[in-house]
Length: 142
Image (cartoon, rainbow, N blue to C red; front, side, top):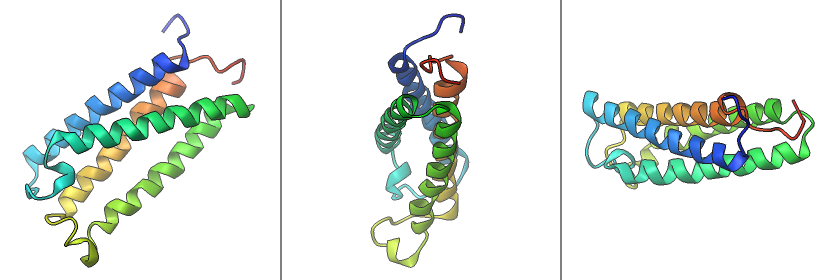
């Protein structure tokens, strides 16, 4: 992009792009793989839209804070995003435990793998838009 854009415009693009991308992964996953319909996280588009939007808005907020406080905001944000991505896999993996079977019936390795791939896709879109593609102003930093 030739002209720099505000963080909030980039944030809208990041969240919107992440929602669209995760919906595509969800659709492909439930179309191609055998995922029981009672597995609520993938039963419809609602949870995908909600959780991707909430986490995306949080990521934009973290990036805004990091830009303000860090002398190297892009590098630091990418590290934070990587750590958060890895941590986001823990609840998904927990869905495969025996204790989660009552709360999340239908959880299968295929369904959990789709959720984890959705996390990777959302993170990639958000980080790419905020730190790379959008040429977001970094306040003279990086």
